Image (cartoon, rainbow, N blue to C red; front, side, top):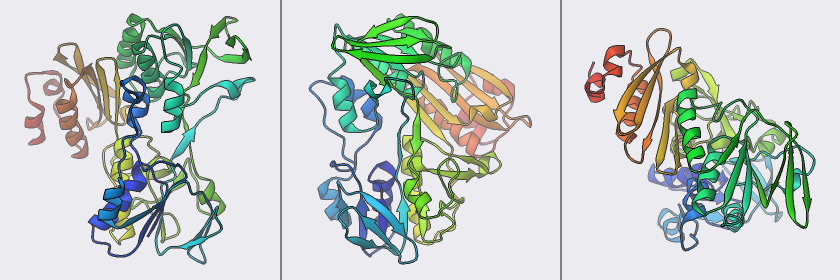
Length: 405
């Protein structure tokens, strides 16, 4: 078995292959110099912890030895020869496979305006280390993009004493994934912490000289700053798959088992798009930590012959200051929202489809306050439950009790 991509999905898949009984050779190939590491801390604790943190390694050398996994780091894969069942590596040594997993992840989307080459991005541990050095008192950081990464960066920059201006093209923050009411709560919190937020604002160009940077906005305003960070999403790494003739559809296209059209090649994590049975077969591509974990495990099972479809409820999370945001399911599938007040400044929104089925839940609140309720809502979503609306709104009604209904 060969896994291309030593991120969360690839490392989990390699371990799962062994844990699920595979006794043959497992090779994990990645182009970074580090061992497989967790990415969620990169926009959070890796920027703020003292002393400077190290990467949180998922698959340590000891664990590699325990699982009998060969990790080839700092190794680029140039091509897949499907007919010969082998991959071509940059060092010219071919590597044969019986089954292959593409866990190639995604790369940071780049700004396309003049002068954008001077904008930093955040995708790798080395990116985080470079960015961390810019976040300090007296520095003014301009963050372009009001999604999860941009907002987490803003919170980290404020925690380290930097001034922050956040620029978002859309009319509001988190427009793609989070309901407007909850996004407004986060926007207010950032404003309270001193972040200047500009929504509905584009970038015309970026100027850089020895004194720093200046961003010319679509409003005509000129913003001088010491560092610019672009957090405008990610692009799936599909080049290898495309060159191998595999179908691409906003990611490497796979079926419900995470298999590509080639029965010996699978894909998992940020790089793949898959049909989700909970949402009528709607094709999704999820950039989320838990999805990478779950799909790594599921892809390993598929590579070993399982016919079980992947059907985990999508789940996203973000920490900003003392607030945690969690989303289970797909809020944009909802036609009606029922709000439950959890107390202590926490709220949970239930999103119902036209037939009353619970299709998503969105929550925000102080650290630890919302986790249990979101977990129960997630179980209701997986069960395709159609709970009573009055019960959802009533915080005295236990969600666990609705699961039995």
